[in-house]
Image 1 (tube, rainbow, N blue to C red):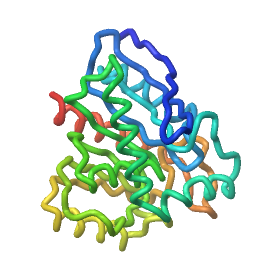
Image 2: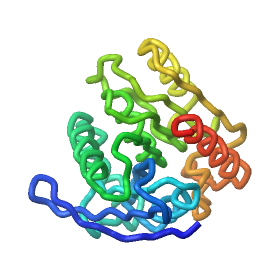
Image 3: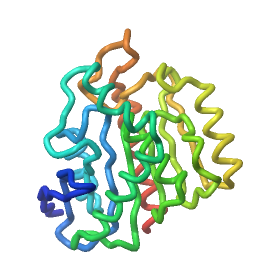
Length: 236
């Protein structure tokens, strides 16, 4: 399938952002937002957009930090996500604005939206579901799972959480809490836990067991297949 790609800039509250879009040759198509990990939008997310386009979806790697902002160390990355993790309503507002921007793109079918996210981006897409956004479903890959405390059981989107059981950044107690939260919200949710698997298992560059981030080829492959099945269920 032919894939067309482009970047586009947009403004939120006077600040410039830049997203990466990959569309199948036949568009508009159902759109899948990709929420980036804690470093910012990188080639990793851009390549996921291309892979989604090859599956027939318009993949849009959104930007939450600002054009050209890309952390280069754990310390920088932590500082980048702190304002959002500490102020979840602020994060949710930024996500809502990005969803609205994606809907406006000519390659997207605005009536058919989903979102996937990795690490910090997993937290982002779970919050998209939690705030009752108008998306069909969300997929969290090794996401942070903590509830924001400001949402009121308005989960309309179907939820798929793909999680390493040995992830030190979201231990089993957080996984159980997420299940209880989504059950209380009467959500359509499913959870895939991967044994012997740590944080960042989809990232081939992750190789820091002391920090808890380790790539896992099998979990990477299995989680992508689970996402493909989920998106096919959403959009047919």
